Picture (tube, rainbow, N blue to C red):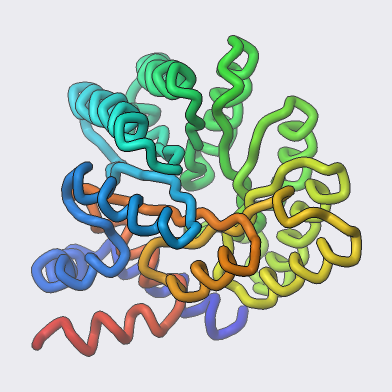
Length: 306
């Protein structure tokens, strides 16, 4: 395990500590703004307009996970219906992402499916697309099954996410590609055991390249979500060598990270999409951003007690 992977595992572990959580909530909200567009939908839509002017598309995410009641899930469902209407009325270039546990998957899979289906149906009415985010491994199969079921029911404006660090991912990618499911390809951001996930950075990167190549070689539109220059540069070179048009894939990055680089890629003619979250339930998302690299945590530590 290299230093970066060790760091990531430590941060993901301690973020569950009650004292660490209290300190982060007490002092970190202001700093979390770097990664979050605001508390409200209007704030998020304003930021989407600003990014669109730079040639950057968006996937809009209303923060929330780990709910404790189906009433909470219903509130999130209604917010997603509202944000889809907001995207349509403001005519911004944005699709949406949601988490299945946010819609009740851990509490009642049937209710979660109906909540998500309502959102996907609303998006279809407005010719928009819904990305079902992939969470940690207990929900992998259920998320895949849900996505395939929606497709089978004619709601093909929905896709999901494949995480390169899971051993199973290559076979999942092949099956979902065959079903015509649009995928976002990522390394993976959760702490998972050796039995189901690669632990070495090199192994994750090699599997990541493998699943990206599976898409590009077959002419399947590819969403590559990474801040890793080695991955981004590799995709650029591979696409040029294979004469793959820049419009045949997109780079995705997170709001608050490498914003100048996102704009530069857009100026160079690449399709770029920024994952833009908003809302008040920011803590889990914030800790995963801190876990990505030491520089993010150092930013917080330098400013936490000022």
